[in-house]
Amino acid sequence: MKLISRLSLALSLGMATALPMAGVPLLSGAAMAQALSPAVGKPLQQASNAAKAGNNSAALNYVNQARTAAKTPTERTKVAQMAAFVHTRSGQYAQAAAELERINAPASQLAPLYYQARQYDKAIATARKSGQTTIVAQSYLQQGKPAEAAKIYQDMLAKNPNNLSALQNLAGAQFKMGDKKAYIGTIQKLIRLDPTPARWRALLVDMKNQPQSRDSKLALYHLMRETGNLTTAADVQEFAKVAIVGGQSGVAADVVKTASASGVIPAGDATTARLIDAAGKRQSAALAAAPNAAKAPNTALAAGNAYLGAGQYPQAIAAFTTAQKGPNPGEAALFKGIAQLRAGNIAAAKATFAAVPNGPVSEVAGLWQLYASTKG
Image (cartoon, rainbow, N blue to C red; front, top):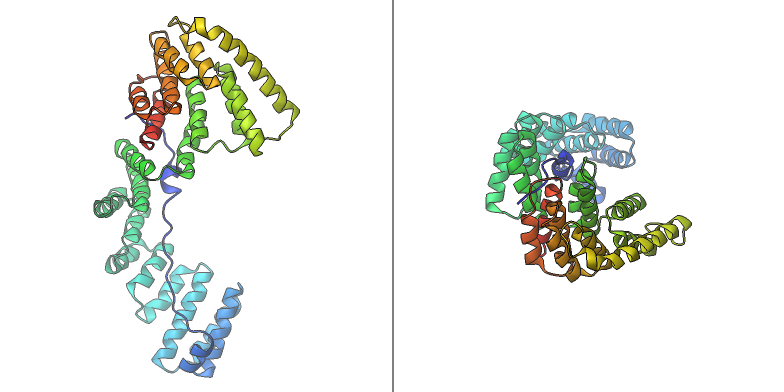
């Protein structure tokens, strides 16, 4: 399968699963009053309220009052837990971890704090004890050891091949390793499992920003529309312009009408109306010329584009098939595959996309093949 070779690190790292924060068990209200003396329980309650209100300085003052008054192991434990809570609220993770170390808190609470404090060796050691493998792997990434991180995610996927979080993070590790082949394979698996608009958008936006041929960009915009990612006025307008220049004026008119009806671009706007009118006139002329143009390989690509814009998919497929013998076989095969997919012939579309020769449109053809594979 062909797939794009220039992919943004944001695809794999930007969606990485957030690491869990340490849960600090706290008593409140009547429970705290019963477990602790008033000299300890009251300032701890005040510390909790102040921290939740964002007044961390006051919260720490109350914690220190309680610490001075604490006499029993239970009271000292609760003081340390509250101190850790306050430090965590203010982003002082090293201090929070130090408080919990005093009371021999479990590794499951300490590991996330060590990670957030960038104390990665401690994070790895404690996370291994508590079975928090994601923290171990992400700590390795932060230390510049992506191969070690990748091995952990591969072990996780061996147990659960459909673990989306592990796939996301494995892709990030493979990207940092420079293993493009493995990275692309992981991205393929990820999109097959979760072909949501958001998942596709990260991939398509990256490619949209790369230099490419006109027909490649036109096919990319088709795929953005197909995956629910044609959501901005700028993209709609650019799609329409590229479609008109690329001989698919019917596509331009249709995409602008749809965007206007859905509110993506202003309905009744004079510029929009002129664009639709101009595209409609060009489409009418192209359709009138299409029957004759479809007979010859040198002109059949234009005919196929006209039929595709009109939604006449059988005629488009026939014209593109003829055009594959002409000067632009890759472009003809790419748009033929799109027409086949629109016509509901998924198997034929996948075969056509796979047969697109290496060249200016082969990367976007790989994306279309991937998309077709999620449909059946």
